[in-house]
Amino acid sequence: MNIKIIGVGKLKEKYLKQGIAEYAKRLSKFCKFEIVEVPDEKAPEKLSPAEMEGVKEREGERILAKIKDREYVFALAIEGQERTSEEFAKEIDALTTYGHSDLTFVIGGSLGLSPAVMKRSNTQISFGRFTLPHQLMRLVLSEQVYRAYMINAGSPYHK
Image 1 (cartoon, rainbow, N blue to C red):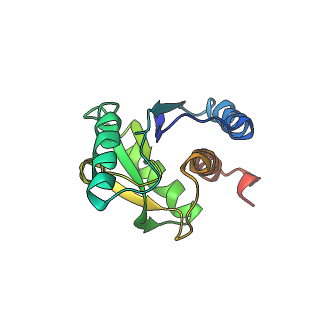
Image 2: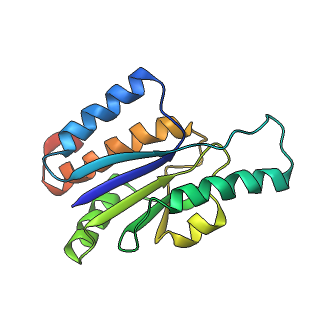
Image 3: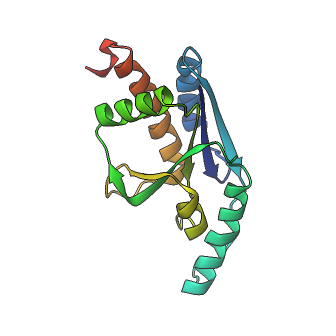
């Protein structure tokens, strides 16, 4: 099983790197886990709607270049479907049971994901209507993937 998180921008915060490294270590018992960073598009503070779409499009091209045809793609998007941890665990278990051994999660930049990335995704997932920094989402998602494996293993971690 291969789990990949594609994120826009370079993670700079030491505490986030440490947290992700801890979950990566824990996940190594279950799967190959990797984080792939793609460069964010440098843009001024104030953008027109057309400029915003251009930024998302260029970041989207970088994201799509890191996705192989066989990968099952989850796009993290506020308009995606919310899942409980148990539902997420069941979904991962079902996907792996039915032949999807490469799961990819995509976290866009501060402006979100391009229409092309959303179209390529197999499903969209939301962690609620809160706005969270996309860098923090890497850590939250890493923990939830680990939690899913723990739920599927019957571990008391989830309690």
